[in-house]
Image (cartoon, rainbow, N blue to C red; front, side, top):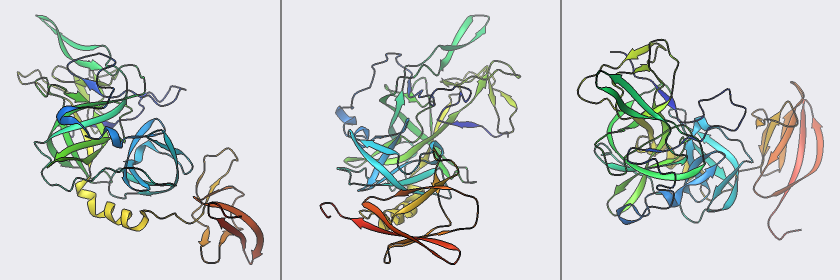
Length: 367
């Protein structure tokens, strides 16, 4: 059996000079650009909308007083603001998961509310609420036979950056290993839920929520969708939300095109979200180590003053002595100091092969 391929839900049009594409949730039932752009009510009230914050062009979910969870592949740097309920919280540290696409970011400040984590198991068969930012669905994708054109789904549409919510049902859990880990899978079904939705580029990092008892809990972080697709075995490729891939080609994991036969049963494309429950022990350890605590000052380095800056792994911070040591070997670099408190460099000396910076941290109201 050939391996099915998928693509992360971020910008695919890499040749564009504009910001990353924000194509988001696509609905089966409607192309209304205003559909589900306000918080859900009824039995979907408080199902995750209230826990979505803006992380660059993407989204993240607070999981502790000063920690939020998102997708590793969407990036981000220390100093970037996480905008939650219209309040910016500057990021000060990140804790990536070695086994999945998850990353926890630490911020300065304290969130007014955080999402509870789904501890599973039991996701398969559960209805879920999906969230993501973006646009209306695009043009129709059709295949033609002797009866004429047959609708298969829709291309990803133009971006508008608005948060939307939709629904789907978890059909299976796949273990991809190799740094991806376990993924929740949901199919974009023609006869699915009334608000049946599919993810698209720009939805990475947003939350997938499942009701557990009387409350909704964070069960997954949006990772990828099936695709790309083509009308022929030689391309060109396109990206879309398809409730039936039959009659089309899908790129396989070995980068060749695989024909999807036109059997009576539809072959819906699927969405993939990194499972939270399988990484609960790791998440709880990160929360226990960093919740409500400011990290020590950290140096970030770059070869150019304008960046990009990355953690300076060769520096040593001594909180007790309030010093930062930088080796003098290696190429010249520009440094940026990151801290939640106000920090002032009050001196610099050399100690053998190291530069030693002395700093002083000021609490609010101190002089």
